[in-house]
Image 1 (cartoon, rainbow, N blue to C red):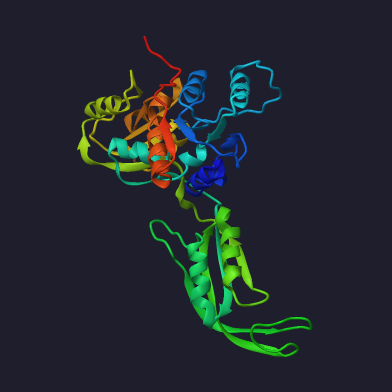
Image 2: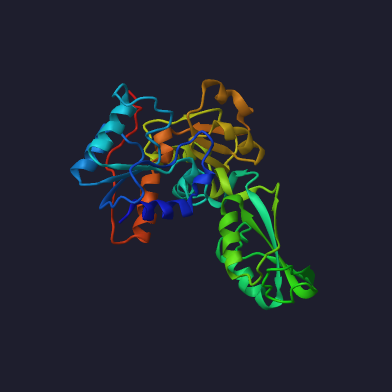
Length: 364
């Protein structure tokens, strides 16, 4: 199988356009056309993970964290990243990372963590802004449904948990075909009036050109009149963190011990405990301190994340309990999720989950 078959599928679920500006997701080493035979799925690329891939005949490693994160100015083995890049190239192992773009989709890292914890009625904690556009097109009534369906099938029209959303209004369009044209209706040199429908729908910015191409392919006019407007609506299906509710209230200490057990954590750090049962829980796998205030504003009893600083724990005064459950611990289930979704899509290809715990942090 070619790498691009795998990468294109992953990017249909978590488009690279959704990664944060500082990130480096995607194919890092190897050509998209390269034929691979077995893939190892892990959280990090380390020497041990690379050796595991070599031992098992894996010529592709898919990880959550990108090996190449900062700029590489040279490749002379001067540090761990350079060593691993050289090792991958020498052994013809391709590297692919699916990082913050996988954090920012509901079925991704935080979706799986919410499922493990048992959260219900989940939604994105901090939705992405400036990612939506409205597309409007005018077409003759004879082609309204064909054009509408092409746009919606190409990815337009998703609002929350609803798909194929659109709106139509009827009107009369006018135009005069000039010399050299071949109009679908009307005659060159004469003003023509046509009963038309206005179709409007919503589309993520990264899918706009795909939707436009699908629309143009089935539209009968030689010159198609359409508009693309920027919207200020949040894209509620994508963004950082998640928030949801437990099926039943839990006493705070009982809840924290359950989280520690579920994540297999040697220890968890937490701030001042709330003096009420836990019902509403916010989460962010990995480093999520930037979401503390958002979690508090949305009424979370507990916010679970990682990499919190000392002074963070002074915040909120018991109104919300901050929990640092560990970076690796809150993202470890990403390996299982990737194996699950890739094996379902490509059932005859060998995807192997790394057996290694790459957590660099230990406790005495």
